[in-house]
Image (cartoon, rainbow, N blue to C red; front, side, top):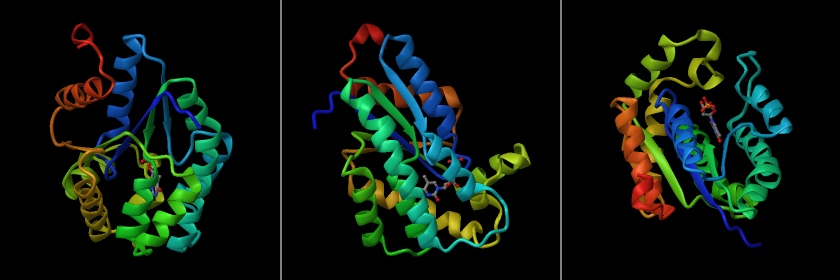
Length: 219
Ligand code: TMP
């Protein structure tokens, strides 16, 4: 399968500002005439958005962590087939807000599902499709949770409110992301998210411009 495009993902703990940064990068690239697809997980397809509600709604339903992992993977499989691969085939830059690394960080490091099983599940769901660059917006757990609880309470997900997902859980998730980044430094860019949004956006853009070999004038 020939994929001409470039696949970029954003990862990070809740409240790290990754959705804002994914949007800013997409807007900047689009303004330069780049064919950009901005999408998110869980979601990105009609099935994925339905699964998103099952996964994130605060409806009091008990979920085993393995069940969560399988649901995230199901949404991902549909997303890869229907959105990501077709866009990459035509040569687009695909920017995805969360991807398979989130399952390893949240369900693996956070909830204790064996990492090896999650890697196998990830490879199955994605047909082995890996991002060329993953931007990790890293932030102390307290700062992220404070940012989120300062926002609209309706926007909070199950992972930010249920008792089992406490500060220690989010600390494990953060450490998990940092460990993943350490193992694969050529793919990951770790960004300090505790700074103004425009400063962070600039750092991310420079890295992506380099990856895409954009000319100097574009910058
Ligand atoms: P977000 O869209 O605001 O990032 O919320 C998605 C939530 O779901 C967030 O708390 C992280 C969590 N999540 C997982 O636990 N595993 C996954 O594979 C993904 C994609 C998200």
